[in-house]
Amino acid sequence: MEPPIGRIVVENPLPTYRGTHVTIDGSTAPQTKASEPRAVDDTQDVAPQPTSVDSPRAPGDTQPHESVVDPPTPSTAAAPQPVADAVWRYHLDVLVGEAAGSQVWQATDPVLGRQVGVRLLPSSDERAEDLREAACLAARVSDRRLIHVLDVVDVRFHNEPHIAVVTEWIPGHSLAERLHAPLSSADALRICAEVAECLEASHLEGIAHGRVRPNSVLLTENGDVRVRGVGVEAVLRGCDPDPDPATSDVNGVGGLLYACVTGRWPYGSLSGVAAAPRMGGSVPLPSRVTPSVPSLVDSLCARSVAGIQAPKDSVRFVTMAELSSELRSSVGSARDTPIPTLTTTLPRRRVGRRLIASVIALLAVAGLALMGWQLVSKGPAPVIARPSAAAPLVSTPSVAPSPVAKVERPLPIVRVNDYDPLGNGQENANQTALAIDSKTDTAWTTVVYSDDYLSGKPGVGLLLDLGTARPISAVRLSLLGKGTNVEIRTADKPGDNPDAFRRFGTAASAPGEIVLRSPKPVTARYVLVWLTRVPTTSDGGYQGGISEVAVLG
Figure 1: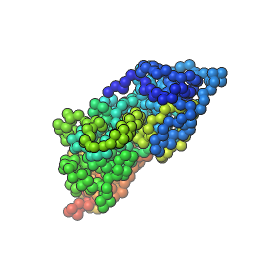
Figure 2: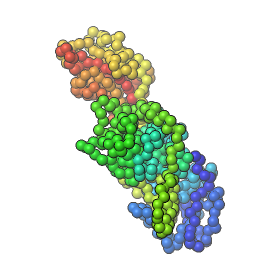
Figure 3: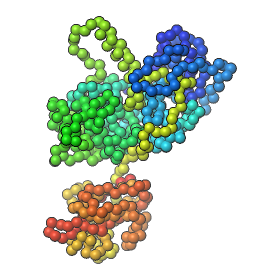
Figure 4: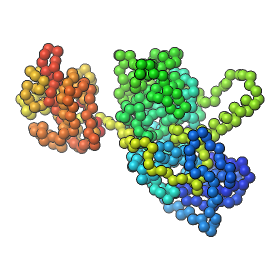
């Protein structure tokens, strides 16, 4: 839903005030007389401030230096610089909060006449360039359920260089606000299916969310599901619950489904959401917490929630596409059922007039606090911007920097050949295609050897041709048996000397499933999977094999 055109105006209950106005560079201009009420299309940048009464502060609000100071007089005030480029386009209105070393503002785009969100991070912060890269990658995702990145600009704020990430501003409620009680399974499946489809689209563009939480999901007034923070939250706070971004997203969506049907978060406590119980060090299935949860939801959670007490025959989801497909097929008719809003009919009870008045007052305060939820997962209630007194951002990050949550995608393999230059020149050449046929029940195998070290041969393997030189970040292998010694080597040209290939990664006594990764991507066309030791077979021989190989980049 398109946000309403115009500006949110918070009117001052006091008859007079003094204040300032701010643009994104932090320059101020005086304002010394009482303000008239403004129309919604008024482009004035000032939200009135009292001269001696501070705004009420929510518990835990640590916004620094909020005392009001008199603006400079006209004779001493620095005149705003003329508008020169897009840096000046976004006018800061309401400081939503501060989190992970950044500030988040509700702002206005006066050119298009709409509200936007602006996240500011000092350019000196070691995460700044990763934040820029993540925001630019997220901007490429066109899925309708995403809260989209609109702009990434370099600005000056309080005379210090900052990076500003500009996003849509969507009115609504966070999923976390809905979890004071479990949702129906139909609602939970529909919400999580929408989130999974959005993240599936993000993964196809090479960017993961990396830190999915109930506060990452926005429910609009008409029941739409929107996802915020793709890539950005992981840069600022780190990937969680898994260090691998793609796996973290699968576990995160599984956590959302668990939280929706139980009202508990399976990875510990969050702001507004209690932690799930532990049983024997593991998270119980959701039906053990909420008995009405159907077995279908139990099964989905068993395959997507990390650390859960899953049945032995459960096969975990590996990709977001797998999870998204299962959620879509599970929704059924629930997809056409609108998601209820936060406004619900309360049971009739006899209450005193004083209690009713108190409840109405609390609801009014809560309604104002909803304005800025979607950009800060733990931010305080919105406070009126006081730019002349606001402190500059501290550039020290509150958490260790995390790399951009990029999703590794399989690179195309145009040809695969057996590679046996130190033997008789061939090793089951007719089976090579079975290593890239996406079937785990087929495989390329070596011949049977008399000992595990290939009867004295230095190695044997498969040579993969990517068609052109490509950045390679990892190689994923499904091996036959356990105990294989394997090396990954790369080259720009094929050759009969395996020592001429560059070493990419090695593993000794590898398990059946393994990913070999380079600290930095390596650009190459040819990838050699080189086996130097093979496991024993059931009949006493020694034989290795590869059921699936994927080159990731």
